[in-house]
Length: 318
Image (cartoon, rainbow, N blue to C red; front, side, top):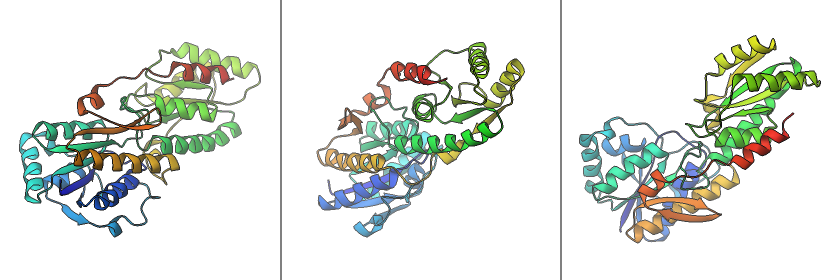
């Protein structure tokens, strides 16, 4: 192992820069030459590969986004695209690759691994939907961002005696909505893992209003239902003013938390170590420890939804 490269792929997440920094500096400390790839797999295909030094990653640990840029690359889904990527890695004599991204990025890494390329992955996604790890890189920062945004919505909701529906990201995983909803004191949390009915939601809102509560907050995980349609149904059934707030991409940006900076740094260094040892797979965290698992385990592992946390959130609501 003489040369490695690092790329960020898919949706950006806070902590990616901390991870890139760790791969570069730790790799160099281990005697490796380290290259960066701009715009993820698209950069691999287009040979947008460049040498990096310790100074290339100076003053980035505290920044959100990714200095390497990121993209979603349909061409990499094809055999021809993968061939181009592999040819460029071989042209630069790169022996191993670190991929920082979500499940789609890891599936791309799996294709490279199946074709003899050594790849180590870091789970960079705010959704926390890679179940082999307790936390994905960027989740902690995103939760704090969402809670702050809910606090802002709370002020308006209280001023107007309004029911506010706040939609979070999640990609089919309710962790972001649940964790942020619990911390923000939401009255109702709707996630894909738990069945719910519009009648139950409206009954709770009406009961709370009868007891003197003039506004309510509903935290909704994306893809559970359309937030604007839900607002209309609630307004019709309860005769309350109800509005939807879709947080969107503001959840992804911002200065990474201490937790995400450290998680990115630790996972980046772990990937370098595993590549040196001749291993491919994915780094993550379990019970506070950094782990490294085969790529199939990373993509197909399962974790039960935290029903106890959900029940607690419901019991603490009005």
